[in-house]
Length: 417
Length: 132
Image (cartoon, rainbow over all chains, first blue to last red; front, side, top):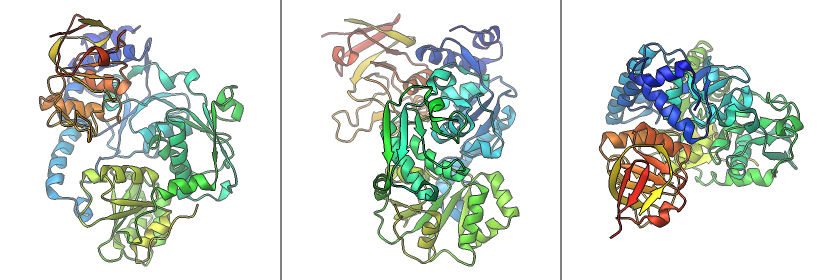
């Protein structure tokens, strides 16, 4: 690889053994994937689940890191604030707390911002169109590429950490213009696209991901005034049932002013048609829980403040029935915002619990005993929870109001397709 | 028998080969504490790859796989080297973070040239397979 003087100095160890190890990994990795040089990155977003020894090893000798770096949610539903109310086992919390404190000491030294969210743009990590970034989290990678038009590769946790520490990443993949054009076209038939619910958006995304695999997706025919939550539920499943890293929406996302621009003037390699039967097929995969729901989960990806406001409206004057549970994943910064708005008090007095952690990996916590059926508005959470529990916990997907109904005394009713 | 391929990470290693016919993942299909494969219904289910030469077509798995590889190394249960047909980016990361040799792009597929249980030595960018 062609390196700058500074990059060579990093690889030589001039800036300490941590930066040296990071640069060595980046060089070997870059050569393996055919990159000719390094790129400067403007922001990073890393996974707070490093073995602490590895984090020390990769940052040894490094003082403050120049790259603006935020942190992904705490994994496996671990919440230092809410674990008791969530009913997490003490031995799990004890182990996780130790690791959490060891990492936090290093994050403070390096200046990694302890955001603990999977939508870093919500809390100030907001690159501009065209900037190169290294973010972890397949959903965050997809969103930053697609809705911001910043450029992010599907880095793994180690290349990502090395990129944060050095401010460099191999110039390759989605950093390059030629790899950002659409490959697969999505069109709609027999659907009122301006009346889709969030569960339906998720169902559509879940279908597209499986059909598109790792190819770049272009969606044509959606209204150009979709809000962030609608886009979030549509896009997140693309990186779950498939491994899509870039999804243009014609007339809405920054690199798709027109269909032609999204495809770079070339014809699509495949066209995927979405109608009621495709939505039904996705919903049917998460419809078989019976009528008894034990727990509802929101916030995968993390809830925004407007979603929490809506949840507060739905829960106003109600309480969770019996020993049913309600967990909400949201950035802790937005918890304060929602508290100021009076929303968290309503939700917490109804029995809900907030955590700045990951709602898809909760089975690793583990899920509280007695929970057999979970309702969620997220296909991503449904996918991972049902697989991580090997089917022992059933997951049903519907809209927020259906999930709330099912844990406040009503029965589960199936989502409309 | 000597096999020559592309060296992604060099170094020396020697050990018994474990030849897996499916893409390998450090997540879900590997117990980092025990160093064993978790492949229900597969003949190699439960086989240890700790200190051995892992031979596989390619890698797969989520972005957190390199952390699992590191945990396996801390437990002394990581493979000693990886020899594969085509190294995908995540498998490269896993080998690089624990600094074990990883080689790919051989003229003859290592899955055909190497059998489970054979002694394999990696040195000077070459893979030597001991024939009985």
